[in-house]
Image (cartoon, rainbow, N blue to C red; front, side, top):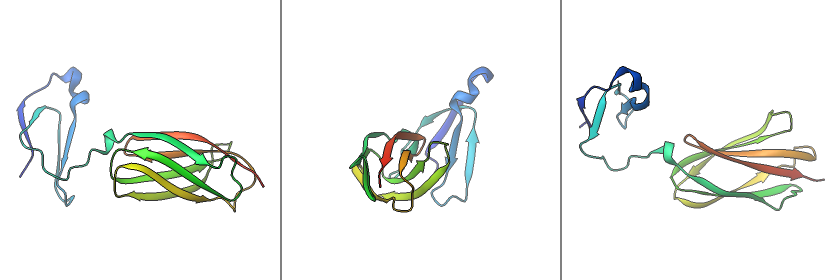
Length: 138
């Protein structure tokens, strides 16, 4: 059962602002709409990763010697991608983390293979991201 019903057309000059992608849970069927729509019934279990909020990110301790505890708050379940960048912008660490419950999250970063220096982390969930500094000392 489709959860959306078309009720008219949107003028061409604003059609990009209301583009809607409908995808069944199994991923086998999808549709795109440039028209207006209204929600008829919201299916249970729908995640809106575009609205995931990320906040309160930090690394403990900072400066880090070998292992750092990266903590943040995330309002949606699903997942997050963690990346570390060096000062040139090159990705030096990347990991995906499953998020089973909203709220305070954390992951232990094993940084023993990296050289001492300044880095930046990025936590990405859906279309949102948050960044911060990490200083690695030896």
